[in-house]
Figure 1: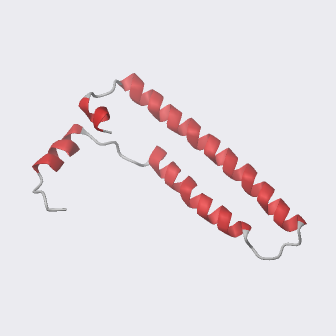
Figure 2: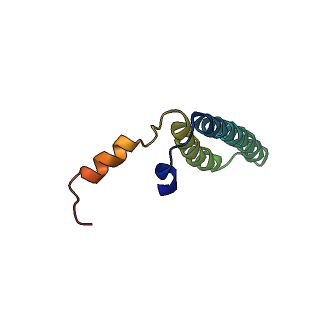
Length: 93
């Protein structure tokens, strides 16, 4: 991550990175839908007892939502953010 801040990336590189993240999110979403559909079908075909696929669907949904947040809502770290962090009083860790 430090290397990213040392040299600002061009507008083209930033656009390529955003496109790659969106494409990766689409692939993640397709995998989520297909795997969960298969799991729920298997659950229904085997007697639909304990609702175990709900755990898989729910936990994976958290990861998918986090990925979507990262792609669409996360604000990149700017040089101003870095300067502000440097100037902020440091506390012992």
